[in-house]
Length: 171
Image 1 (cartoon, rainbow, N blue to C red):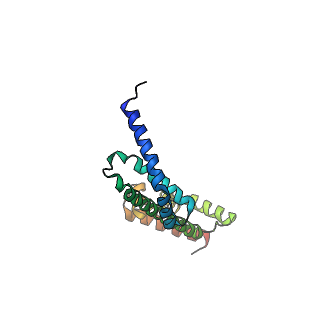
Image 2: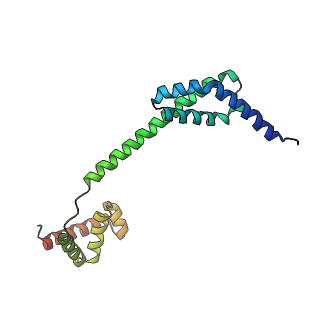
């Protein structure tokens, strides 16, 4: 059976990659472990490095430089890993702080009173308050949603809040 050129290239590169893995994997693993302090992560980084370099084997001019390419790739992958972890931790910290800042749900009676008072407002005032505070839109976004000027939206919110305060006994 005659092999195609692609099959030949795969066989040759597979053999070459296996040889390079045998020769360089232990050193790369030690480097990755020293960078991360975590053996399973170090193994993953080395495997990822070999996968990345497998596609570039045809372009490596000097076979002796493979070790330098591998080291650089392992270091870059470790840096990327820690950068992603830092971003993830910052995100989780922000989410944790926001979760604490969430207001406590009002009592059912107070909530029902607010709902009744809100429903008694004129529809444009009610819409302005809901857009501004429930959906947390800016004044400009509220005005755009109501198709009015920002000053008009601000006035609608102000009058609606004044009415709610008077009806609920808060002012």
